[in-house]
Image (cartoon, rainbow, N blue to C red):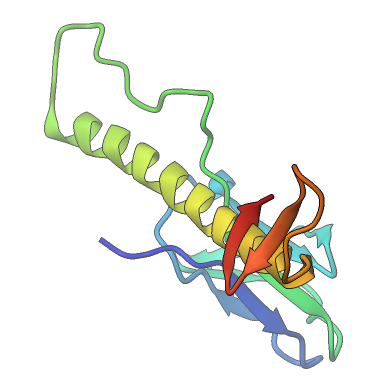
Length: 135
């Protein structure tokens, strides 16, 4: 099982194909932005996407996964339980967990870097050596 980490790449003005470095269930779960704006791209293989025009030098290209959390990809109501459907259901849960854990770790780093390093008034947040605390 692979871990999950989005891919953040800086455009060079010539490269138009990029690797999708993580597993996904559906291609629609893969999201690509350039400078924060969603982009149209094509799939050239199961792990590669391409733009018609290469992103400009210095552009920020983000390739991330967002697994659909609200729609079950497998439904066991019919009474049949097969390994394919069971594996897909567990992958959906794993991928949603990985995405949330990644987002939380990034938010914690950003939040802890902006908090004061000593307690303030009761009910305020502060960074105690990398541990986020509340007064």
